[in-house]
Picture (cartoon, rainbow, N blue to C red):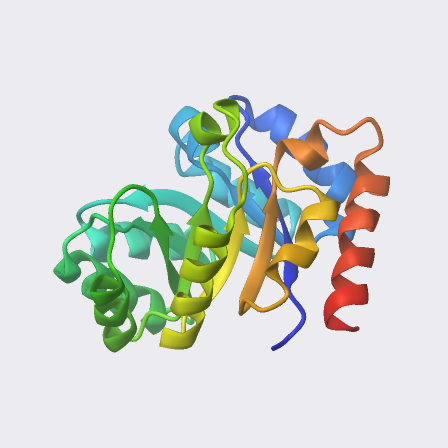
Length: 217
């Protein structure tokens, strides 16, 4: 398995606030994400602004698309995104069209695993050419005290065995990372753990140190 990347999720309601955090952390992360809340607040300009601010970083448009996959993938990637998210409940046709549009622009689709999905769904996504999914412990689950458990890890391992690379998100801290050493992790996604930290750069360094210790440099 390759070394997982570190992704900064920006779910700010203000582009200016997001850009302040990017200026502080862009040299300490591999991927910058225009989060769903930021994109709903600021529109397509959020992706364009982050691309201008981070010309050498991978940019994610976390749109959680449910329909119009082709059109929205075109818009996201033409605005500067490398990857765009599609919600797992989207019809397979939406995923196929989104994947084709992203691939034509040198980008990728990530399937956001929110709500109900099956391993048969995952195999269908893989057959369309999709190679990435996001395993998500949502805000509400975190708030209710839900922890990462053996069921999560078993499901992640099964997705890895299908061939999907997983980005993992949901209240992660550096001390959580050893849990995922048997999973094909593409990236660890951190939002408030980085931007809300007392010393965001030091926290990013702790994430990167754990990644190096577990997966090597």
